[in-house]
Structure formats: structure tokens, C-alpha cells
Image 1 (cartoon, protein in one colour):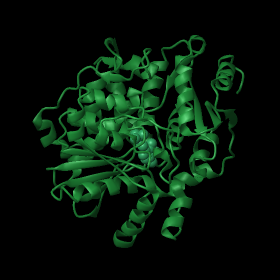
Image 2 (tube, helix red, strand yellow):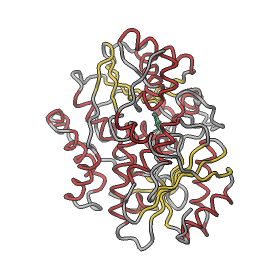
Image 3 (cartoon, protein in one colour):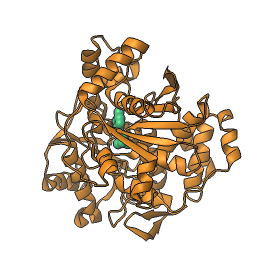
Image 4 (cartoon, protein in one colour):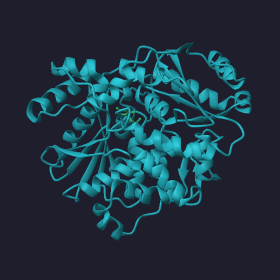
Length: 437
Ligand SMILES: *Cc1c(COP(=O)(O)O)cnc(C)c1O
């Protein structure tokens, strides 16, 4: 399969090129040239397949010419090493728990697949591949852990100082080896802007082989389609299935839309956000108006300029009416999020994390008018990742899973960075000269 840039349909590349480049040279986002549908019998027997088998069938569609079948199996085998269980919370309401991976957030799926795929393609490159990742918390940990020790790669994580939880920070500042953490005096949007600037800086790109690990990378998006298929196959009731996706950069929701295009019978999507409501606002007004992000308790979704927006538009042929019919957008305040966490815990004894809680709220709001809908909301992170916040809201202790504990013992190592490109460029150039940063 070939991939085109959202800025030019004529610019076609292979999956390998799309994965290694991240962003297209014209700053567009790569999209699959065609998104083929599976035949109906594929869905009839889906429930008999394992998560890994489903993931393989889906990934094969996108990578057939680029990754040999045997190797793809290996990649899937080292990506999908944990389950994504559906947990019934209320009637017609399921949590899809995507947090059973090593860093306890759904980003493990994307980052692990991507690191293996890039590792495969980077092995043939003369220059070391430098992976830049701006993070609002969870991308950094998932990407750093996914790439830790992958030969011929170096990871540079940019994160907003003081705006990620302590556990999140520890997960990418304590690893060492081929991982460097840059602590930016600014917001997540600043980090994202700096990364974009790095990609468009000609001098830097001549010296370094830069790529992105943000959800603009196709290799991160593809594995996020797997669990939509898997979740749907495990639902006892398969009509009128809607997915509510707590969103920031809208990679997860875009992956769901791609799964739907591949024939997966998803009736509707809910774009659930915190107060950073750019997409819900767009769905209401048809105006896309990025603005500076505001801090919320669901900090991994504090995004003021969602990077996958143009992919979503592209999937609907830039037709506002079509996109409006397919997706409902709702935004929620921190107070509403807290109240949802409290009521679900009181009634169902289930601990939502603040991000999943936004997804839950979106689903409930939609179901109020569509009682026939069977709803799945994505639980994108383990509540212990946001221990302080969750404990305060629920007035109870949240045990830390063993997996997380191992990160807490390491000591933090980061390089402070002013939110300006000159400083970043200097650091990156030191990287290329081989000196430690
Ligand atoms: C990244 C993240 C999100 C937002 O996902 P997008 O694909 O950027 O929309 C939601 N919840 C958690 C816990 C995250 O880490």
C-alpha cells in the first residue's frame, strides 16, 4: 500500500518511508492511498480469533509490500503482549481497558509497534535515526520504553516542565541509554511547535535523520486500529455500537475512523474532550480554531491544536456535513470529570482515571438521546498514573501496580530547555556530533 500526504495526493511513499519520515516533506500527514474493506465473513468469524491474530490481519493490509509476513508476525508478537479487556460498567456501557501495557497507557500499543517497525527500517539506514517526541505525559513514557535499546535509534523527549505527573516524568527521565529527556519551560503546545520547527529546519535535517514519534506517524496510528476490531469482536451485542474516545491530538479517534472505513460496523463516534474543546467546537460551528491549551486534570488531553485534525477531515473528503453525522463532540469541565469519577466509583465500584472519565461522560451524554446504542468508552490510562489527582477525588488510596513501582526507584535526569528553537537546535546538533547531551 502507498501513502499520500494530506497536502498533496501526488506525493506517494511506501509504509517504510512514511514510518521513517513521520511528517511528509510538504508538512502534510501521511494517509493510506486506499483503505480497503474486509469482506463480511471476516467479521462473522472475528470473535474466534485471538487479539494477535486480529492485529496481524489488520496490519497486513497496510504493510504487505514493506514488511515480510514472518517479520510482521514477530512485530505483532512483541507489541500485543497484553490484553485489552472490555469491562461492563453499566447496562450497554463498557470500558475498553487499554492500560495493561508496560507504561499503563494506550500509547504502549502505538509506541511498541512503531519502535519495532522503525527498528526494522532503520537497520538499513546509514545514519542513526533520531526520534523526536513531544509529550503531554504518556507519549514520552511509551515511546521511550518502546525504543529503549533499539539499535541505530536515539529518542529525544520534549515535555512541559511541571505539567506532567511525577510517575509519568519518571517513566522517561530515568532510563538513560539511547533516551534523552528535555524539560521545556513552557506548555505541551510549545513542545509540539518546537518539534515541528525541527522537522522544517533544513540544516538540521541535513545533519540528522529526524523522525517523529507523535501520533502524526502512520506507524503509531495503525496499531491503534487493532483494538477497535478486537473490542467489537468481544461485545455480546454487535448492533448500534458506538465508541467514545477521550481525545487530545485525535490519533485514537482517527484510528477508529480508519477501522470503520475498513468495514468494522461502528455506528457512531463520540469525540470527548476536556475544556480544550477545539474539535467539539468545530463540529458545532464548522470553524477550526486552534488556541493555546489550558491545564486540566486530564492533562494528556490538554491540546490546543490537535495534530490529527486534517487526517479526520481527509477521511471525510473535507465534507463538514459528513463528519458531523459520523461524530458527536462534547467537552467537559474538571468538575464534571470529578463528579463522574465519584459517581462511578460509588455506584459501580470502578475507578476511572480522569481521561477515561471524560470518555465515559461523552458516552452518557450521547446515550441520553440514543438509548439503543451499545457504548464502549476507551479507558486510556491506569488510574495509578494520576495517583495524586485520583486519590484526592475519590478520598481513597490507589495502589501502584508493580510495573509502575519499578520506575519510581530511578533518579530523574533531564536537560532544561527554554521554549525557543535555537536552544533546541543546539542540543540536537550536539547529538549529531556524537557528544553526550
Ligand atoms: C494521549 C492520551 C489521550 C489522547 O489521545 P489522542 O490520540 O492524542 O487523542 C487520552 N488519554 C490518555 C491517557 C493519553 O495518554
